Amino acid sequence: MNSRFFHKRAFYLAVIANHVSDPSNGLGVDVHYESKRGDPRLTTLILRPRHGTSSFYRIISLTILTDSPSDNTPTDLSKLNAVVRIIPTLSTSSPISRTRLSPTRSNFRTHLPDSADSSHENVPTPLYNAVLMLAFSPRPYVLSVNTLKDDVPAYRDAFSLLRVWANQRGYGEGKRTWIRGFECAGPWWNAVLELLIRGEGPSGRTNTRRRPLGNGLSSYQLFKAALDFLCMYSPPQSKY
Image 1 (tube, helix red, strand yellow):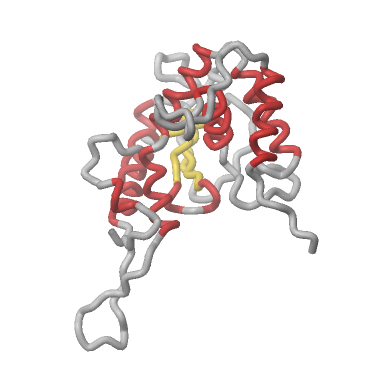
Image 2: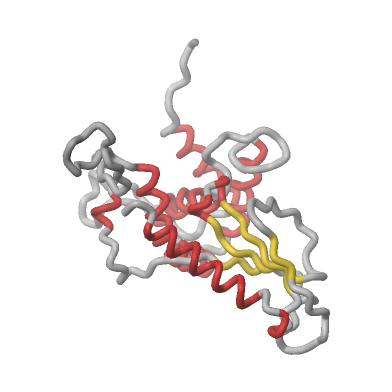
């Protein structure tokens, strides 16, 4: 409650950043803080090799620069065309109960200024709860993506087609104007494809189950199925 988790998360990242940026490590990387959607509660740590990728990254917070040159040691990352992103996560055995993170629960309370007693304002905090819930998602997401790549040969190309389609229409962060809320939503698009491929609902209850498409479709067929799904469940357009 009251951002205790996020305070500990920030301290944890700061300790890692301090250790990695120590010149005695000889890693040859620049250490950055980056906040997804500009939300400091979603800050991650990015390690970029000094002479690695030239991709553009929007840095929200302080940049920490190491001063160790390229030395061809086992810890030298300067020749790798890769970026390491450190994302703190919560395990499934975390003491934080999932039921306390439902949209109707209150996890950020303040004292009422006009109250004579020590009562608290108790209103739902759905956005706060959702951000905290994201700490459980990185590991299941990576496992699901790897499983889909192994089981469905066309998944990789279908996912690329869907992301290109989405980015061209503003459903992704870019140089053009985008639709707020869809930036950094890569896992969501993966979830759409996984829903279509695997189906949904408990097995044995055919009346509530979405039938799976299976593993034999081509990338274009999966892409078209995703568009049909989005069109079917999109809100109706207002005539005004």
